[in-house]
Image 1 (cartoon, helix red, strand yellow):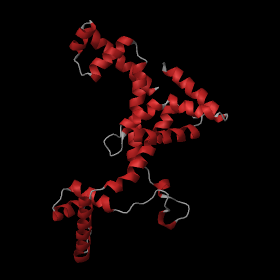
Image 2 (tube, helix red, strand yellow):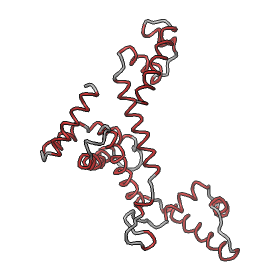
Image 3 (cartoon, helix red, strand yellow):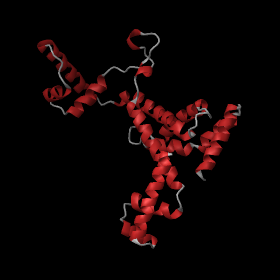
Image 4 (cartoon, one colour):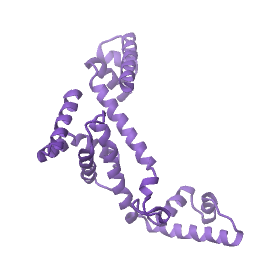
Length: 245
């Protein structure tokens, strides 16, 4: 299916959602389930089964459907990805403390004890590298251990007693934003590649996904190395122009 058709299909379904058609939301989810699965794959091996990640991501998809405005001037997928990522990351963050190793908790307590001792006896704050050395653990282990015993603050909690400002309002989830940007970039690039002529798509596949040399690519496609080199320059220019448009 051409990307323009996907865009038009999404726009039509979104308009039906706005008009109160309850079945349109289910259709829109079905149309974009591949997007959710793509995002979910980025979070494999983090303690949650893939299908569970997909189900959690679908919550973000539904939130995107219900809050997206057709006047935004952006593709629905671009808008939906950060919400899907955010929903999955929220689950992993909230579910994480349950799975923390007891060893890390014990190390965390020892690190805090040493930190308090230094503060009490020497009147200074000890850095994590010093604490790690004194407790006989690596800096990475010290960071994990301290995080394991740190109190969990809800993003909906009020900041400094203010009754109108929450942590969610003042703290940007930079990691989530970066993850969203990376996924959006990959999706945008994939969509651009899918719109290339067949021969160009084959060159991209062989050169950048199978890591073949220009000569190997030329042999596989029955072309000359010079031809592949020229076409590759055209491909990169075309992708750059479309991604920047």
